[in-house]
Image (cartoon, rainbow, N blue to C red; front, side, top):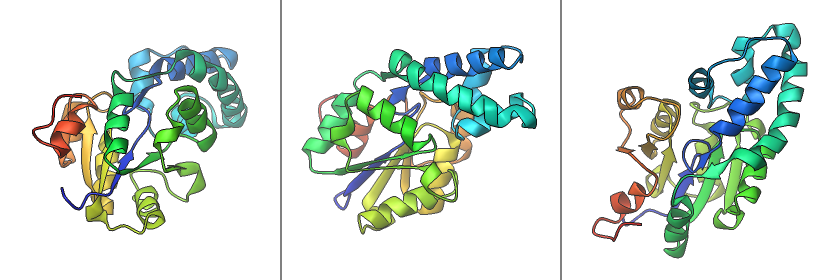
Length: 219
């Protein structure tokens, strides 16, 4: 891919394992408002559409605003305590940064919490641009976030790769006309991902180096 200039990454499930933090904040919110605790597997499957959409199916509409405030207050702390980069994720960022690519983040997570993660995990210096769906009219799988990032760098879709972990990421990439690689470390099953026919499916984030630069040593 000689014309590649930009690599756009999703955050949760792609570079960062924040599931323990999300599960902790979710179930503390359920307990605070008198709702039943949910199994981690069920919570994990609900991740990826933003925090309001995460809570909404499990609580009454009359409780949603208060519950969301409580969740976000708790989550500011749990993110720092319980989130980790996936193994060797920083190495893949270093690898591509060192080869002169522009790197960006496209996340459905609210901006404030994305930056808590990015700063805590010490990866802010890798990214030229971070954009989250709360700054836009539409969340993924709508392509607005990817189109906006392309416009920011004055690039065409064929000059970028998008890397995510969910079926909705594959949908967003296809709608934006960007080749999309999906890693199976997130909340979508491999079968769900395959149905969306992404450009590539990966077992781990470091597989991206070999996909884009065949013949390179493992990262």
